[in-house]
Image (cartoon, rainbow, N blue to C red; front, top):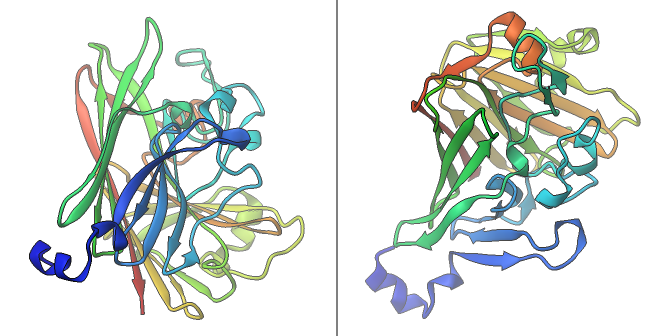
Length: 330
């Protein structure tokens, strides 16, 4: 809607869309900065400035889309990169970024840097700087820079930007990852996109790219591979299943709930994110579908080194990733 026409219907564009910065003042996430985003196309979601500029709670047309763990939102002060701490702070949310040095199980990279790497890396424990959030007649823009560094060793910058159409229902995330040192860095990266109830239920259907190679992570996952894209009612103490999808065709996954009449598509940059991990948990209380575009097979830095999956970012070089979510009421 053109500005001249818009302001004949409303006195303030916040009636339809906008972005608002808030500071939480209670609980384990006390003190963190959140950007609350609303679009005229039915999206309401949080961008978490103090935890990797990731996405938190998301609703579309009033329906919750994302998975949230028992922990809820976390503060970077609670993010401790030590053994066995991940499950105490992992919030879930619509998007949780993993990396930048390791993705998957915690490990010690004996044959590489010799360091301990926590489960899914340290990225989410970093607060963004150089923050910006504004709206024009077409889009809402949120951006910032996240640094992952270590004295004497690596310095990686992620310049992250969200572009959200004010009258639409989609989110485009663009990342530029830069090595700020003259030395090459072996890196891994994964975008943990998490779908939960009520959008995810036994009425939900998943369609993955046809041209792909699927590798189950465990024997239990292999036993259920024929139902990889199907979902059932929650089962108490049901083990999770994980599948690694090596994609050779158009990188689009589609999730549809026939009961709610909501269709969601996930797109990503296949040239930089050639794998799509799928996390499926039908467990009571941990009922979730994770679709995870990534650089690797999500087995941890030590195992990825053995398989040759670690990517190298040369000194002062950059790469660009994108992830796009589209929401549709049908």
